[in-house]
Length: 569
Image (tube, rainbow, N blue to C red; front, side):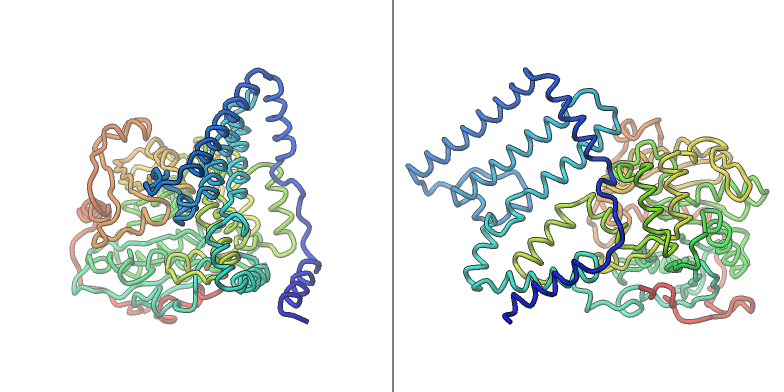
């Protein structure tokens, strides 16, 4: 049997094995498509006008291609609109590929315009139609098929088809592991060249390990920093490499730094909800850090979903008369009002919740690959189709990249917490309503939070849109500072000062909306970290002798950082 036939047999065996049932239309696209079609057919004159414009533009493209064939020229073709899918020079220099590219872009624009102009759709239906129309259009790009991609055709001829054979092997590998390979993971090792800042695990329970990092200065600020990272991913995005590590930078600025390393949940965690993550998670870590440092309070940082939970945690502490546990709060790309939560809302509805309930019913948790696939769909060209072409059509291995290594090291989510988070916050938007959400018997009112807060958003964030993050400024009652960082959900946060990569915007005034803020804000070059440091330092108390991890008799060192929880894959 030849190698190709053997691979085909392996593929067939894997695909015909037992699989978990999956709804045929989990996002309700069939009725939505019928609604869009009915809208278009209800206005035949407008539909005819749109079709006529498409025909005229297509005819002009063919006429231009004919002129170029009849009278070849050495003149450089007109510059293309930037699109990484068509970076290969053949897409522009070769007439047929150029015609194919332009025809695709023209048809795509026409199709998306038709969907956008559909009447009779509410805002949610229009957003869903727009998003999934874009997914369909992106999937049909000529760059994604071997016979219409000049790079793939060239490689196939030069390598006599070996690229396609390697690509099929890569496809089988990814089918087996259930996700697309985004990077070469072999050069990275947690605790060696990522998550490598020295420290000790000084506390642990069923939800997290608490890491205390070794000091880098002889004296430190009295009030320590506690970082609550998202439990959707591993904490070391904030300790990625020594050059990019927010943790290492904070330590070098004279702070005692603690980080929560969340457990990768299993079946035994199936019933844990948001109240558990608050009481046995964030509050337990706050109490341990304050006691270890013999400090009056902690500076709390919440990233993404951990920032979302930090907000009601502060309100809960205020209601319980324990607000002095936290002296300031910092929020990285965190949402509390989900009315404008972006495209992720399209994945949250009654049918989707039923599907997630079904998927997690047996194990008690949601497999990390489902969340990863959802996030990848938000940037499909960069995180899906780019790798389809590279890995499967060109038969190449993706290069090593620390950020994508971390991105591939995802975690599971407990069933109860996930369903509660999506139902109460995304669907119900109860956190934005005073008393709308109840945690551990306490109705939550964010207006009760009066401590200073620093709120950071990413200008190009596709997970926590900046206009949604900005709404946090409308809920707290204390002094606030908002910074809009360049880039997105990750690079907007992990932007060390020495990189001098992305700018940021600040304003002493906080108007009602992000749009108004943007008209007032001052653009500043480089990282926002120094701005945050200047805000935090006056609140950090006097300098005291540095604290060695594990020196406190009640919190001895359990193991070296980064601990074993983060290594659970």
